[in-house]
Image 1: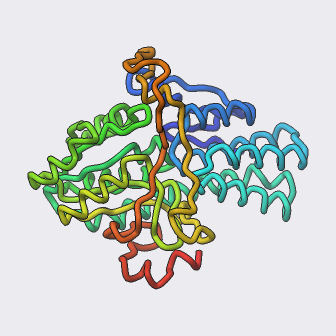
Image 2 (image 1 turned 60 degrees about the horizontal axis):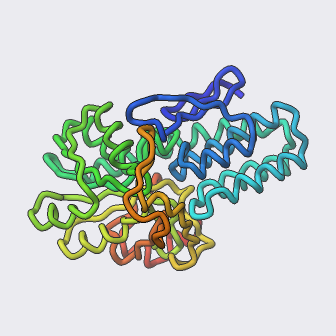
Length: 339
C-alpha cells in the first residue's frame, strides 16, 4: 500500500499505526498495529474510535495482512473478527463487506488497493458533508456538539466537526459548546483538543448543562454524528444524544445529524433494531485516563452503562449526508431505504 496519513491513523513504510486517543489531550502516542487482536483491543478500549475511522483502520489492517502473505481463508477469518468488534457501528461492517467483495472477485492482491480507495473515499465524504453542512450555519451562531466527530473519528475533517470547521474557515464567527460526553469524556478530552488546534472559539460544559444554555437562548444549532442510521431516519450515536434531541425539540432549536452514506443501514428498518453495546461498569463507578484511575462509588455498585442511545427520526431537523441534506419529508418518502 502507498503511505496514507490521517490525524489519528497512518500507514507509513509498511507499518500501520494508531494514535492512542486514551493519551489525549496531554500526550500524542502512536501505537503500532500488526494483528487482528491488537486492532480489536484498540477498538474496544477506544484507543481508535469513531464509526468511520474504525472501518478504515480495519480495512488498512486487512490490506497490510494481505501484503504480509496471509492466505484467503486467514483474511476471511480476520474480516469476520474485525466486523464483530463494534456491533453498533455499521461503517465497520460496510467496509469489511467491501473488502470481502473485492477478495471474492479480484483475489488477495487487490485488497491493499481497496483499502486505499476506502481511505480516500472517507476523506472525500467528509469534505462533501462539511461543505453541505456549513451552508446551513448562519454567521455569529452558537453550536452545541456531543462526543467527538472530527479528524480523530474519520480519515478526513470529520462529520459534525467537519461542518463546524468549514463554517469557521468561512469566517462565520461561530462559537462551539462542547459536551464533555461519556464514556471516557471524549468531548472534554478530544473535541476541545481539536477546537484548540483549529483556533475555534469553544466552551466546555457538562452534559447536563445543555438544557440551561438552550433555555437562555445561547444555542442556535445542535450538530452530532452517528454510528448507524436506520432506513426510517432513526440513528444511534454516543449516549446522551437522545436527551439533547429531546431538549432541542422542546426549545425549537435545529438538530442535525451529520454522517456519510457509509453510516446508513438500509437493511435496518428502525432504530429499535440497532444493537447497543454496554461498556465496563468501572467507567461509571469512576474515571480513568492518562492520569491514572479514580473510583468514587462503592466497588460493587450496580451500573447501567450503554455506549450509545437511539434518537427517533421525528426529533431530527435534517440529515446532513455527503450526497444531500435530507428533510423530514424526504426521509418519510424512503430515500434511505434505497441504499
